Image (cartoon, rainbow, N blue to C red; front, side):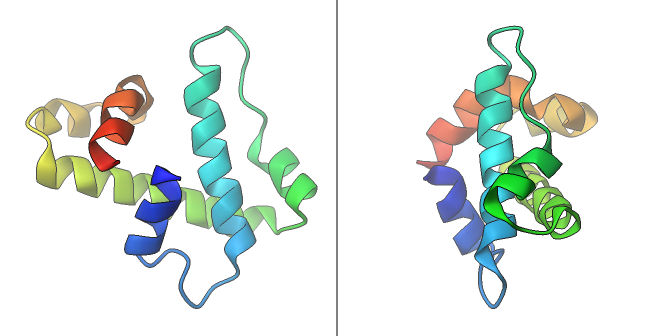
Length: 102
């Protein structure tokens, strides 16, 4: 829910088809959950096939959502410089980000 609210605030859902954005949010959430056990998250095209949406559009929404998460981190978190240097590792701090946004 927190990620959907962030997507709505950042206008990722307005005037667009919502299912690719939902697929992107679901992919980020499942990636965060799947990081704890050794199971990999389901790939984005598999989620898109389940939700009947275009994988290319969902990939674009995923990039926009990741950019929005990094923008929130850049604006409001004190350890942002380390986060920007290691942008690929933002999932390691996912619980703090999600807790901060809620």
